[in-house]
Image (cartoon, rainbow, N blue to C red; front, side, top):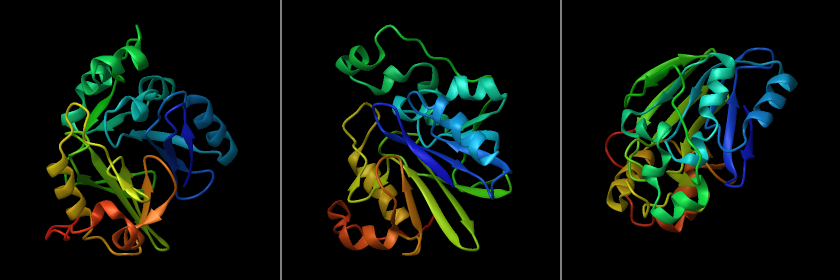
Length: 223
């Protein structure tokens, strides 16, 4: 696994593969991510076969159409956020639309596939288990990928090191994200959290130190 913070929003874009020279999956190709993706593909001799989106906010899907179109690969997104691929302004207030979008237009990739809660998708020699974790957006999801030496959870903007996702944008809901976080906290402490922004952490560290998780009890159902 490798990645980089993309664009002015510094949203983490990840490339996930079993090893150099293998197929890979791209997670959250954000603003101006194309060049960084190409550099990593060349460096590690990777072949992308899919793009996975944790949610439809512009800082995480800005480059999805050109990345998919250039490689002829599908994009996976939860149906509740699919409309944001062609109209990301739906998740922004008027001032944000003017500031971030201006007169720009967006379009869906040619091949868009739906993500469903609890399904496991085999891609690039790995299995990605989908957790529907709404609250930041209605269609926010996490991707859990386990291997012999790593149990990793790509959380998008659900959970960060020391913080959680905002819920004040259109489509956000604070009580809903708390329920999604309670569900996420059922995972083992050693689970590595790869967030949409900022550094890597673990479920255990966040359970103990994250002030926004105080008082949240793990739910009965895990991811």
